[in-house]
Image: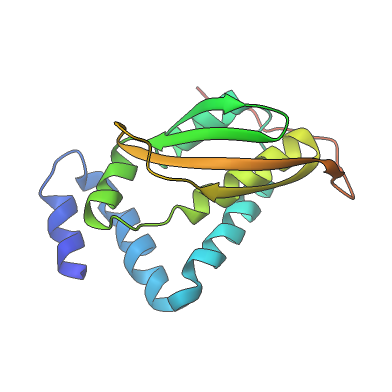
Length: 161
């Protein structure tokens, strides 16, 4: 697979800048973490959200673009669920090489960010690939009856535009 990643990313000028990230994410981390890579990436996504505190869904959208995680779009929002689609070159490049690629880091980041914004326990799952879309579905489940035990005042970082 290593040669496939190299050829896949460097044969397309739009994907070439993503090669370094793919090398670490899909080769090095999987070598180091093995079968636990997905779980650890999810918890690291939560840790990143604690370090990079965001104050709104629009901030999430901007941050995902700036970090080259993909184009995040809110599809539906309720008191119990936030449904997003994550698309763009970082996503489609990974999916075309690995149709079963996980986006655990992004899922963990969304879960923790939502939990901090709303003040209730939140977890994210990767849903089915949306029909007629080049991306994935990420669904944040919020539990309005389970407030965070030690809520802290949200002090979001400013997003640089």
